[in-house]
Image (cartoon, rainbow, N blue to C red):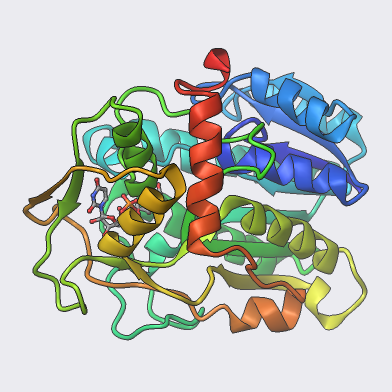
Length: 342
Ligand code: UD1
């Protein structure tokens, strides 16, 4: 297939593009490089022995987007472009809705115009809010607690409405749990500009001395060790699921039509303390730790029921927490401040 990957130079996008090439598909990267580097594309080329086409473009530039789709002859789109920092979304809601919602609207309109209606969308387990029970299935109630989460929720709804109006659309909503790690080769990973916000990138910054200690946001949750529980998933496992989802949409089974929602997680939750222990094992040093109050907006525990993805996509996450930490650490050591610093 010829696949357009929006946000294809980003953390998850770069892994998805590498997985597409590895599976024998062709990929075109579209990225505005607001939070990514063109060097990611060069790295994909080195890794796969084949350079994907790369177009610098913002999804808010409707004319450029339509021109690209008109001339592209694509079989499908994997839409990963978007802003993803929860705290930033609270401070800058307009920017978040514009990038995530307007960008998606523009993409869908351009796709509709050229008759391209096969789409895999990068959604998030954030749409489950605080789950009533775990593990969460795709049928659990949804909502959001911040503009980032609402933007994912709204795009999901937009895509369902488009598919209701036009049965020709084939859509996958992929709800990621907590993506971490890096490509096992150490060549692809997350560009962390400044101080990281998420747990594993922060631990990596502690291990390199950039942050003084690992912060545990709350040890008084109703969990076995008192710290928050999440379903961490290796980014390479996640990337492979995108390829499978697109292949299923392009197949000729009942699953190729309509809108499908798939949880992408391991099905296993780990506490903050367990993640710190795994990272300490990976980097062979102990990390100084400090317990702080709970982070506003955080929930006690969430992890996926990934059985629908296993059944429909023939996919399951294979890499465990130690491998996630090892691969994350390998990337961090090779690229302390991202691609420019490799
Ligand atoms: C958050 C977002 C999610 C987003 C994801 C990746 C929410 C509700 N969820 O997930 O939508 O897709 O980031 O960008 O905001 N923790 C510490 N110390 C730290 C950092 C985190 O104890 O220094 C804890 C948190 O309290 C949480 C766990 O580690 O229990 C994971 O946190 P984080 O990596 O930030 O991800 P989420 O908040 O789960």
